[in-house]
Length: 209
Image (cartoon, rainbow, N blue to C red):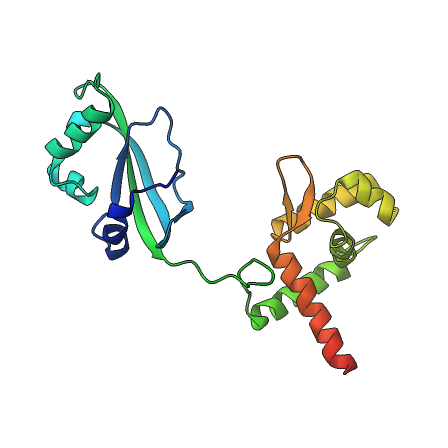
């Protein structure tokens, strides 16, 4: 379900709408996180508060896209006829418009990282490899690239390494945002890691030519 109705999108995009009030039992948005808004890009949640419905001011209601607080409360009462405006709470969500999302690569499906940034990331990974005892971080990434998802025990077997070493290095790669953990506790390469490996391969190919 969309976060906002289509009628509100232009007001969000122009900065006229920077608040939203929701009659939720629990807040479904997290302070500091950004969320996609259909057709216009992304917003970032600046703050979330629980407030009494009757405390909402006309100025706040206007920032939420209503003519005044009375109109907004009437809308709430239409959605929830038994609403007690003097005692019931709602979520006051303050946000800012971030703009349109960067275009994703049509082939890979993720946002392209500039070559200079990838070069710096490559150097950082090489430093980690030089400090690594045992298998390198790069070797783990290359092995993971063979599978969409994998578990620690699979990497232990395929790389013939100790469980604790692989686990420790996977979490270190996670700190670098090169590895992600899904809901089924399986590890996978992040888009950042995939682009880094492709960047390395392209540099090798260029040298050969």
